[in-house]
Image (cartoon, rainbow, N blue to C red):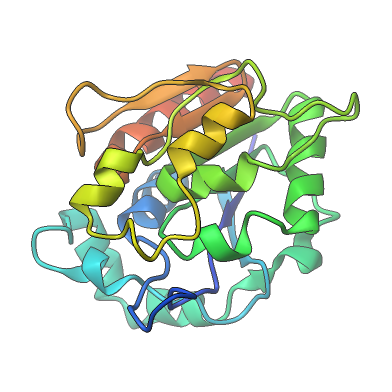
Length: 231
């Protein structure tokens, strides 16, 4: 059985309050993409508007560019793929076994209020299919409401990039909101690692979330393990 996976990425390359560059955090895509391909799954990469997916330059620095990310970033075919992502509207009628929200600060600007994304996530969740999000990509869950009118993340145990990590990243002054606080305000049972910037993944039923870029590998492993249970 070939599973169908949708990876959602950002189109935003700069912060609204400054000209500081942002975008997709590369490892939060590459680890999931790599493991899914190794399993023989079909993978679609889509963004709110389709087309070019900017990469956060911080994620390309030596310390952050891990072996998997370096392997894919060195391939011109992969970089070309990221210049031609599908739009969410193009894939909104397709059926997926997993919708995965990759992170990067750009998602704070184009995931939060995207109705197509919200509808896709709500339908996916209520059909018993898997939803996953990592780091700032978890923000894409903030405004998702289920058919009963409740927020999807209400009473759900989740994680995501926290406010202290935002300080460590020197981004507190340019981000549009405090993700950790917003997740809590929606009624979620927010959890985080004892040590900031370390791998941390939380599973609550068919909802899986990862805290930060350092969770990328573990996130992919946990998701793949859960997907195999569905086959």
